[in-house]
Length: 95
Image (cartoon, rainbow, N blue to C red; front, side):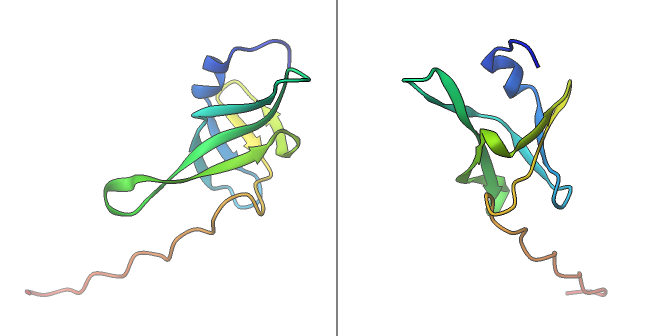
């Protein structure tokens, strides 16, 4: 990939290649000031009531597999929390 602005990253969805999970969108970029290189992308974790912001997922640059037109494919094994438990089935009938 050639040159690209940080704004381009914010428009791309991050997908974990290990399990196919959609991790979210890049909110920030970490870079090494001395080298002028990007070292990681940061994706917020949505969790809890109303999907409020939890901790951030920091994905090292080396874990980026491919940057496409619409998505960033990453190997985020060990970088992000495991998926939450599946929703409990609703009980039928009146309460």
